[in-house]
Every structure is written in structure tokens, then in C-alpha cells.
Image (cartoon, rainbow, N blue to C red; front, side):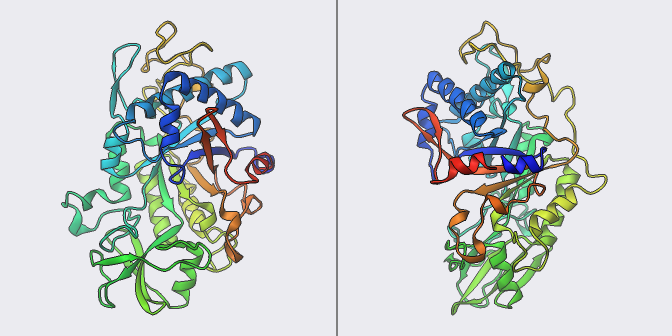
Length: 437
């Protein structure tokens, strides 16, 4: 992988799933323990063959019917990755997951506690204990599907919404707090951030306040070409041209903008350098592991529009996270007590060689939660394999990636071949690009 030859500290993960793939391939591979074991072994082989450092699970979302299967899949992958590392002498493949930021979805899709099948002990957050990091999708709280105007990624809820049973849950602070209260150590939690905005059609020129009626998504951008959605470089163009007027939300610590666009009035929820700087300070103050970006290719990557330098949003976050005195928390001995890898003949139903999940004494190469680079906060950046098709200044490929910008690049997406229980590529040149990272 060419990027890693430039920056050996860079970690490149392969994301599997995503919204477009849907849930049924995950449901298929988790239909039996045998399927999960086969998939885990095949995934390890695929990742090593193509030079990846880990796998990112993007199951959106397991729901109540498959929450236990998600747990079992995480366990199977962790155990197989551990066994493979012992056999190959290489560092264990990393395992991460992108999870919901909505409390209702969190409660439905992820087990806050489970009876550990080989000991009968009640264990908190069973699945997530096998993950190196938990990428919380702390964005898209509002969008074109919403009936009212609202910010898609506020750091905090508005003052007037703090006691509302629904609105009080729709902020990044609320999402990260809820995950931590469920038992996830803060140094595993990575807060999601967006390099794009959500647009809404306003009902009238004077109806521009949060909570006013939304008539659906705004018009497509010239490069992102998705209704109700704008990349940051498209947003800069509209703010700088005066098409949209920026307003700062002091309680939520984010901006929005509104104005007349294409003969109608639109409202935009987005982040800028100021709000990203605020969010970096929040991550440091809370002792979180770092930030995750969806996506690297929606930032103003070549400084073609915003005049703030290349990747202004990601760089603003990085500057805040990597400033002197902003070191992340390290694992305490108690938090580091995690499952030991089992023998190569491991089976989830086996009890002969299992170690209790709360015990220690395991190989350091198999310890989830201890990141590959603890000298800095994590900055994980998703790269979308369809960015190569955007027109003009929106076109983005592997060649555009700055190997020193992020600590982790997450290549999105691979899919699942349910017949062979293997990972499979999506775009025509995915395999070649994986090998040339």
C-alpha cells in the first residue's frame, strides 16, 4: 500500500456494509455459528492479502431481532483475528464498528448486557468489548426526512430542548454520554463528525428558526448531486457568494445558514472550522479516543473553494486534538482486562479453552482498546470508493489522500458474498486500489 510506505504509522481499515448494502447479508452470515466462523476466517485472509490493518463493521442496524448475532459476530472476528496473529506473528487485525448515535436505535440494536455463554456470567456491552474502537455516528439527527428544521450534528441540544424527552437526545454530547453510561470506556469512544451539511426547504422566508416547518430536502449540489445534502466545499461557495447567510447557535455550538436558492428558500445545517474547533475541545475535555469523519472526500480537500487550506474541517479537529496537553486517556488495568485469544480450534460454543471476559493474562497483540498509536487522539477518516465518479472539483481518488492527515483511513465499502461467506469488492477498481494504497 503506497500511502503506508510514505507514513508507516497510518492504519488502513476496510469497512464492510453500509446503508446501501442493507442488513440481510449480515443476517445471512450470522444465521449460524458455523457461518460466522467461516466468514471470520475468510475475512482475515482477505484483509491480509490486500494489506489492510483491520475491519470496520457497518451493520446499519442489527435491530432487536439480530442484536445477539451482532455480539456473536464481533466475538467470532476478534477470536479469529487473535488466532491468526499468533499463527502469523503479525499484529492482530484491528476490529472497529460504526454504531448508531440514536438512543432508541442503540437500545434496540446493541446488547447492554448478555449472559456469557461459557461461564454464565452477566457481562456488560458484550460485543463492544471486542472492538478496538467504537465509531459513534453522531450526526444525521435531522435531515430531509424530518418535518421540522433542525441541526444534523449539534454538539449540545438547545437550551429550550434540554427537558424534552425526544429533542434532548439529539446531540453529539447526548450520544457520547449515553454510550459511556452503557459501559463503554471513553478511550474506546470515537465521536463521529460530518464534512457535509443537510439542507431543507423552508415553508416561508421568515420561517428560518430551528423547529419551523421543513418541506423536505433542498436542491442537489453541483458535485455531491444528492437532494438535501451538500459537501463542505459546496457550502463554502454558497456562504461566500452570499446565497446563504450564516447564523451561529451559541447553545448548540454549531452554525446554520439560510437564504434564497433557485427561486425558493433553503435552510442548511452544517459544521465549519469554528464548530470543529469546539468539538475538538469537547473530545479532549471528555477524554474520548478521538474523532471519526464521514468523509475525507467531502472536505475542501484541495482548498479549491473555502480559502482555509486543504482539508480545513479535518485540520481544525486535528489541531485541537493534537495540541499540547490534549493527550487521550490510556487504558487502566481494569479496563484492559479483556478476553484471551483461544486456540485455533475455537468455537463460540466451546468451553474447554475459554478465558473469562474479565480476566487478564493475554497477549498484548490481542488486546482491544489499546490503539496502535497512543501518542495522539484517533482521527479516523472514511474514504468512499464512489468519490471517483464526482464531476469537476468534486472528483476524489486514492491519489488525493494525504497520508499524514488521519491516523486511520477507512475504505468504504466492501460487501458480503453470502454464498461464499466472503468479503467482496464493489467498484470495478477496488481490488487494484486496495493493493496500491
